[in-house]
Length: 340
Ligand code: NAD
Ligand code: DAU
Image (cartoon, rainbow, N blue to C red; front, top):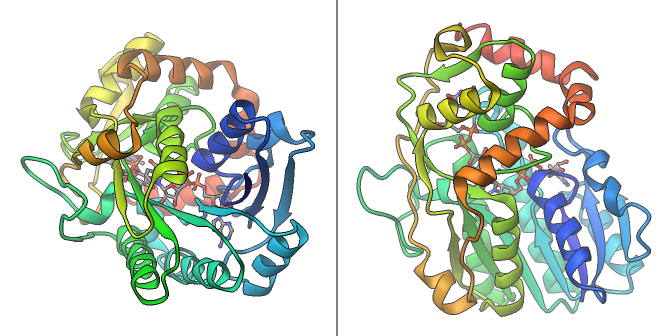
């Protein structure tokens, strides 16, 4: 299998690359990544000298660069697209890049699949496209009802994929994953932000009443679901990939504090809520179980505690991000000062 993995220097994309190269001797992977603030060559350190791996620094919106990467690889069998702007809060403050990458970038890759002889494209999407649900769970035919510029852009990407399949027969399919946690996640998202803040003696900024619910999925389970969709999924189909671990943000915060031996009263600060904050995400994953033979395997409590310990033991990885280029500090000032 020769793969073009777009966005492979990010959190989930790099986990996919590391895991697929470890599992499959005969897979070759070209990572194409723009290296935005969230893209990090350190995430690919474990595979950088592997002869089956190559890195191309490029933007998925740049059609000529995408074509060149495919041609230089001598063609690819599949594209797996992780490349996206991914942080909901940034999409509220600075939405333009989301529309460009998450919609136009997806369109560019679909055109590349049309132009080259490519067997499959997997578009990595999110449960956020369905929006909030108070009770029950969304299956794949659920109405798209996004609330943020991020989820609206991801929904736009999904609709392009389905339209390209219906119109041109492009062999693309979609996975919609739930909230993912694990090592190497940029420390703007809830779990790595709270863990690293706690390790630095900083407050944990909990939005609103902290009772919003997310369905937590270990990154290894997520990438296994994406791999199963790549090898066993049908073009034109959508597959929900959820962890089955619905927890409030207060519950996640309590586990982090307990694992690090800290108290709620001295560590947590309630801050102004995120605008348009979805209350609860929930997806039904029977289709992935039945048709892909996939199910999540990582026990949530153990997976989260291992993840917390990984950040505790790998300060070299996150300290560079939080205190290096100034981008993290700029974002913290831009977003959190007004919520304090
Ligand atoms: P991330 O922010 O950690 O990484 C995104 C990667 O895409 C980075 O390496 C970045 O440099 C790259 N990128 C951004 N714009 C690009 C462009 N124009 N051209 C090329 N590369 C570009 O994201 P993540 O959390 O790993 O998410 C990966 C995918 O999974 C995204 O599509 C996201 O929507 C989806 N997803 C994420 C989660 C989650 O909880 N993190 C859950 C479900 C789905
Ligand atoms: O559901 C899948 C989605 O999960 C992915 O598509 C997104 O790319 C990913 O970022 C994630 O989105 P969320 O908005 O759910 O994740 P985030 O980590 O930003 O927030 C999780 C919850 O924690 C949410 O209810 C908001 C809350 N939160 C978050 C931050 C950053 C806080 O209370 N305080 C914070 O500082």
